[in-house]
Length: 433
Image (cartoon, rainbow, N blue to C red; front, side, top):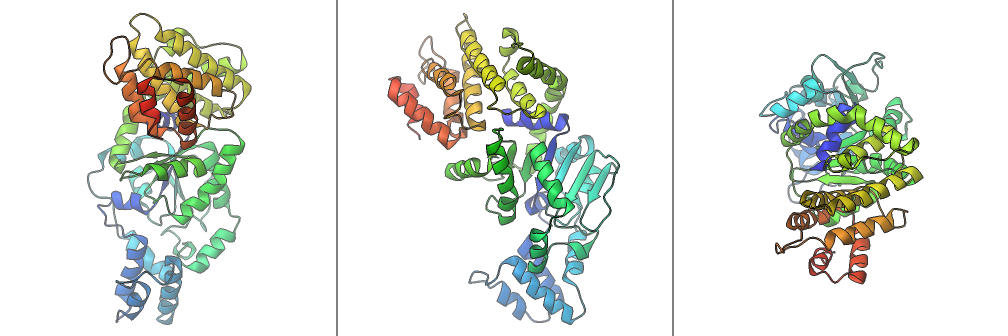
C-alpha cells in the first residue's frame, strides 16, 4: 500500500508521530494493560470491602450512570475518606504491567527509528520499548532541552508524577481549560508531522477534540491529509468517509499493531534512499521551472515520492506551481501509457489517480479538469473481462481502491463518467457510489 511508503518516508525524514491510546498498550502487553473502565473497577475491587460503589457506577444490566471521568471522581472521593489517593492507586496498577507477547516488529522499530509519541496513556510502554535514547515528557516534570531519538509526550500525565495525571472530571476540566506547554506542543506536532493513530476508537471524545483543530488547519491551508488511523477491525465505509471529510483521517483497517510496523519497516529502506533526492527534485520543479523526466515518471513509486516530498517541504496542494506540476505528471503518465507494451503504465495511472483522490478534495480546484480527463482515459482503457488491448490490472486497481477515494471525489467522478462515458466497466465501478 502506498500509505506505508508515506509513513516510512515520514519516519526516515524524522517527521513521524505515533498517537497512542489504551488499545496500543493492550496490544503490547497481551491485553494485561486494563482499559479505562477495567482500571476503575480494579481500584474498587482492591479498596472497597463491599461491591456497592462498583455496582452503582458500573451496573451489569444497564448503561453506566456517569461518564468514566465522573465515576473516577466518585471513587477518588471515597478513597480520600480512607486516606488514599486515586492517582497513586491507578499508578501502581499501571506501573506493574510490562511489555509482553510476540511484538518483534514493534520492538525493532522502536529501537532503531527516530519519531515522536503523543499519548493519553499513563504507562511507560513506549519508553520501555525505545531504550535509553528516549525522553519522557509529562506535566509537572522539567522539560529536557537535549535531543533524543524518541520523545514521548504524556498529555494526560504519567506514572512518573501521579498527582498530575488526568483521571477525574476535575482533572479533565483543568486540563481542557489550561493553555499548557503540552497543549501547544500537541498542536505543533500535529501540524508538522505525519501522525499515525494507534489504539483508539474513532468515536473517542478526546481524540475528536484534539483532531478538530488540526482539520481546520488542513482545510484552510489546502494541505493533504497526513493523519492515518490504524484499526484492528474493518471500518465501515460510511464511517471512514465521515472521518476523512471531517478530520482528514485516512483509515488503515484490519491491521494488527505488529503487522503495521512490519509493513512500515519493509518500506523504510526505499523511502530513506530517495529522501534527499526527492526533496531537491521537488524544489527544482516547483521553484526553478524544471520538470520530471519521463524515465522518473515511468516508475510506480515516483508519484508517492512526489506526494511525500510536497509534505516534507510544507507546500500547499492548491498552490499554482503544485497544480501545474500535477497537471504535467498526469499528462505525462497518459502519454507513457500509449507507448508499445506499456501495460504497467496503465496500472500505475490507475493507482496514482485513486491515491490522489484519497488525499485531497479535487472538485472546484484547478486540477479538476486534468484529473477527470485522466480518470476517463484510465477507465475507458481498462477491462473486467480480459479484452485484448485493454488493461485487466488497471480495472483491478480501480475495483480495489474505489472505496479509498473520498466520498466527495467519488460523487464527482460518478457524475462525470455517467454524463460522458458509455463504457460498461467504467459505469460498473462508479455505480457503487
